[in-house]
Image: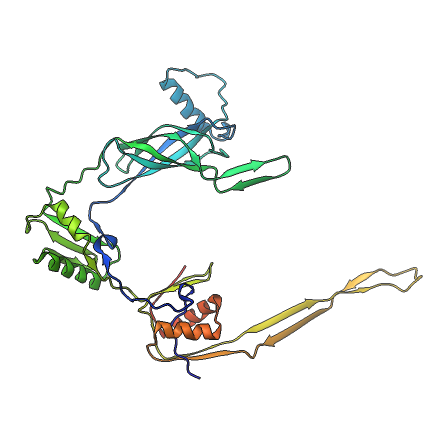
Length: 368
């Protein structure tokens, strides 16, 4: 019995019909070289906690940072008994967008680094945020929105989410800008997020066709150079037009398997050579039925003992699944065939690995 079928995937369990390649905007598959976000990080203090802050014995750096803060405010606490439980040391992170201007605000994330148990109700004190070059680009401050909660009683406790992390929407104000001047550039380069010769060639052809002149030149599978000197259009306006040009990106034949969840995702270009698959079930049942042995009635000697009684049965299920995959089958054929055979996700993962090992699966197999 010959069944023609391609690869099964949970996402396409009902065998939908879809296009192998779809036109997408250039802005969705590439980045402008040099135009990117920048990561910021800082060390700060969250105050106003309800006794859920750091223990000074386990987090001495919190006491030092708090004492330093109070000294800058004109309060001397040196030599004093300083044991607050409403302060927590935190690491503050944020992302500085490209072309962000001084005075604009960005979101920040806060995470405790000591033994604080909850940041709910706390307020972040003014915290400078540094980039990789060591310069301060933003300053964060504001009330923390904790991402979880915890509650406890005398005999039990419950925690939902991570109450030791939180966020501050629009909690940082940008103080320094990252300069990027389009006007002084002679050449602009587009970097494809997925390097591919065919996709890069299509992007080059689409740009040149849209402007009627050879503005774009493919340098490698991941880079297309745009000559800004050969056109009178301003660079910012030129990029506004280029990023909305649609192309059809090429896809690699790839099968992605998530063994934890049993999810299988594959591309439309996956093909299988002629191969036979047999898949059967082996059931081993171990049954324990202990027997209790007691001494005779009125006997003066003897003990009650439990004797083990184990029964093991092996059942080689006759419902073996045998399929013959023909040459270069289609996706809809495989989905229909595997659905008809009742192959589940876990079984499919084993089948795919075996087909790949046999050299019949012409795709990259990615196991997560």
